[in-house]
Length: 320
Ligand SMILES: Cc1cc2nc3c(=O)[nH]c(=O)nc-3n(C[C@H](O)[C@H](O)[C@H](O)COP(=O)(O)OP(=O)(O)OC[C@H]3O[C@@H](n4cnc5c(N)ncnc54)[C@H](O)[C@@H]3O)c2cc1C
Image (tube, rainbow, N blue to C red; front, side, top):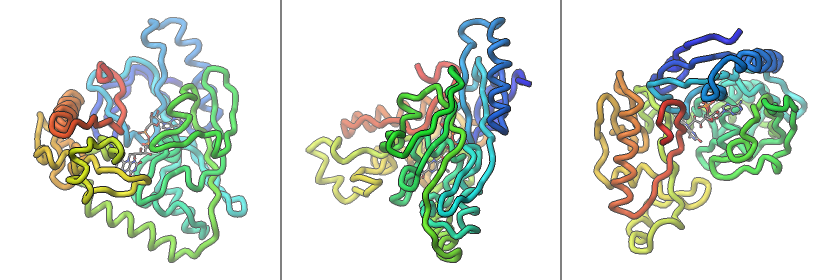
């Protein structure tokens, strides 16, 4: 049954957000289809503006509005992990951390770069999440999705997913599709090597990221070095990193505009990692948005660079 007026704060890594007017947690493909059927009926008696659906994974890359979302939020909690020779098939709602534990137990290598990456496998595929030189697309074999309009099940090969930097067909074109299952092609390795490699990344993140506060990861995308105006190129050469192509870390640009530690309301540009805006306890979505706007204006004024959000806005007037 679809629930009403469910707090989104509890599903947000940021611990920010109002209520979803309608909410459903789908633990299987069949539950998802049942929910869509119920929604079709329910939609007949609700205003046009509320006939919208938002698909939620682990809520680690989202800023929910304090005003909430006046439509249906479907949380994808489809689980299941199995191995078929050197392929690993995961339900889209599996946490990346659980998938990594499973690769370790089954001595399958290829996803270690994702050590410490929060969120679900479905969310990682949609945004082609990446870290430490790896990206979700690298070992991806096939994705199964459901078109929520036509109810068609679609299987896409890696190539058909049109992956690019922090993007995929699911983010750009196939907007009506919910990722159900993800199939990775991995290689046999040994448990200890996989475990050590994963733990190294988790340790790095603990040291570098402000995980002691609710946050939504890196707020901005790193900036392709190609987009740096000529007159700043020499100054920035020392900061270039490969991620997976030459970029200037957004954190560096924010640091150089002296916004480290800048607070609005109860949210702050992290002192530990300046591309994180942390919730000090009672953060509001409007304060996060105001701080994001201030950062964008400051970086633009000083370096003529347009920072782009990596996080997404859901609900209220955050997208305006
Ligand atoms: C501390 C921290 C560190 C992070 N580090 C990194 C990093 O190193 N690299 C990186 O790339 N990201 C990073 N992130 C961002 C985030 O973890 C990833 O983008 C993650 O893959 C998002 O997954 P999620 O399940 O939380 O998605 P959500 O935040 O729930 O959703 C993100 C988007 O994916 C869509 N979505 C989710 N599930 C599905 C599905 N099954 N089908 C279709 N669409 C779906 C949602 O509609 C939404 O548009 C970090 C975040 C945090 C909080």
